[in-house]
Image 1 (spheres, rainbow, N blue to C red):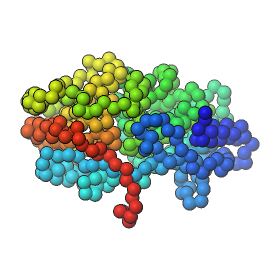
Image 2 (cartoon, rainbow, N blue to C red; image 1 turned 120 degrees about the vertical axis):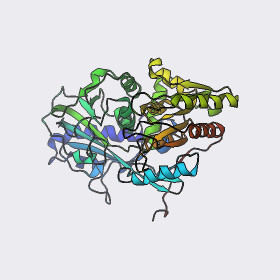
Image 3 (cartoon, rainbow, N blue to C red; image 1 turned 180 degrees about the vertical axis):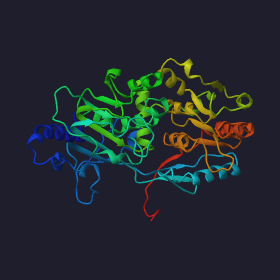
Length: 457
């Protein structure tokens, strides 16, 4: 049985490819006017279904000319404007008001960088987020956007739309691949594969499985990170490294079809939850079956080595272990070592036993993509002594909350200019852990659907 959405996309793409050669002018997207005005993404019976974006596929009166279906670009044959639901997340939990004030002061100073959220009272609101999936035929990737680098116009940065017309047409050929551009900043690292590439794979999932076959993936040429190789296979059915096309600054990659999803929200419940659900499913678990948090025994301690060392880490770890022992609930403190797990499946299996994650800010927290909803997160956040900047930003607060995971922040201001934590008040860490363990069983989700109404009028 084929869904309405699938039928529209397949019919439209097939028809456009057949008649493009005879179309008047270079703007094959005009042919999309015969498709439906509003489509939708087929439900998967996943929890993320409730967060599916509305998909606009036709340029009708009132849409901006830079909306995906209204763009007039040579060889652009199909555009989706994805309207993501508004939502709000609860501000982090804090041990005391002083910690809260320091965190909020940093957040206020972070406004020029953190543009997607708006703090009002005890919540941060995320409004009017959109994404675009653009499909071109017979175009060349010629080095723009620049692959793998951090820049304002990089893939999944705020100005990624600058490059929607950066793909030169060519005459086409039977051997050219259908490809998806995914070369976002540091896409080869576990951290930024998880928070960028995985988000684009989630946003385009309905297209990858319904339009075309044998997709290739344009990424930066670095595949030595074991966790990233394994994540590819979990998020892309039948994946092999032969599907990767290396992107360089002076690349000339000719494609028969190119999908450009670089305008994807960095933070939204749909993409974050769907990515985690697909990983769970590929690891052999039903994403709809969530182990009750009260039945999970593991408090996962994330040690830090190298940069942002935690000088009195062992002292705090022993304090947490004492709290767990005093509770007498059969819980155990497990110190996380990624090298002890040979596969993503092993970490997902561990995640189904984890009640709480705790540690200083660092890449190990990206393992929350393998955890289940309701898992608590306690992050020690290095903050500059003037309380105007921090190393942790908002990333794990946002990533945890949009996955229905409560989040606690422990601010540490005794840091060096390189963000090494000289000393953490273990009492603060232990208090946050105790509060989390005592309340996780009964806490409501920090994530809520939000309808603007006239609240921000």
